[in-house]
Length: 223
Ligand SMILES: Nc1ncnc2c1ncn2[C@@H]1O[C@H](COP(=O)(O)OP(=O)(O)OP(=O)(O)O)[C@@H](O)[C@H]1O
Ligand SMILES: [Mg+2]
Image 1 (cartoon, protein in one colour):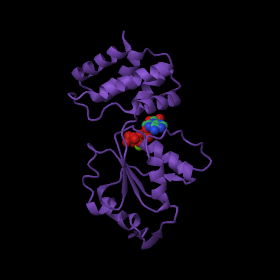
Image 2 (cartoon, protein in one colour; image 1 turned 30 degrees about the vertical axis):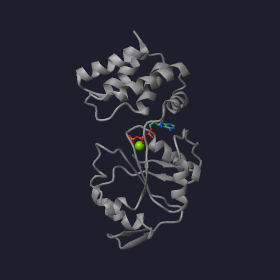
Image 3 (cartoon, rainbow, N blue to C red; image 1 turned 180 degrees about the vertical axis):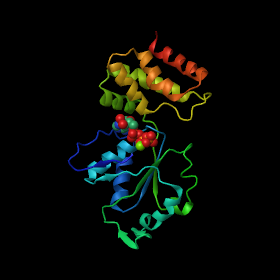
Image 4 (cartoon, rainbow, N blue to C red; image 1 turned 60 degrees about the vertical axis):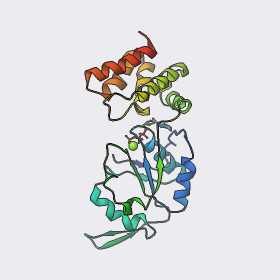
């Protein structure tokens, strides 16, 4: 993903979930790099976009850093704040407003497992989880325009699916998928079918697992 925002872009909606804004601003003001971890679709990128916009900074996103690039970042990530480019012999100096942020999904991405403590310990860290139900309802309503009662049902469904322990899913249903389901429902698709397409079939190929997840959908949306 390559993403650029500029000051003229509209401010992305972001619903805070804890002290993350204060922590990010502290890191920015103190020239500390930040590491954000959390499951897919829980709001990490949206948060970073929101903070870039709030601080009036452009955001440059780089696709999946390779393990061998992380050591190159050492002098940039500590108080030297420089990036030597071996190939050209250049020495780039980070301006005061430059901030390095890494985000990743713990668990199935072994990127950080392979990261040396000496790299890791240059960052301060922030753990994201799925938002609390009342916060996730607000996000769903804001992002999809769905009725509050349906948002509440979708968030209850997400809670039930996330609580399932005996399934073979790598990750459970994300806020992102809940928004997909909400948008389908808003656009007239029946709730059960919306949940099947936006959640269940996206989460698993295994028929038995899909069947089990659909039972939970039926329990909440009837039909
Ligand atoms: N706190 C929040 N405020 C506003 N929107 C949110 C929030 N959390 C999640 N979202 C919504 O969920 C969607 C997915 O979030 P986002 O793209 O930030 O996930 P991510 O954590 O970066 O996932 P990945 O690890 O896959 O990159 C966003 O597009 C946004 O619509
Ligand atoms: Mg992301």
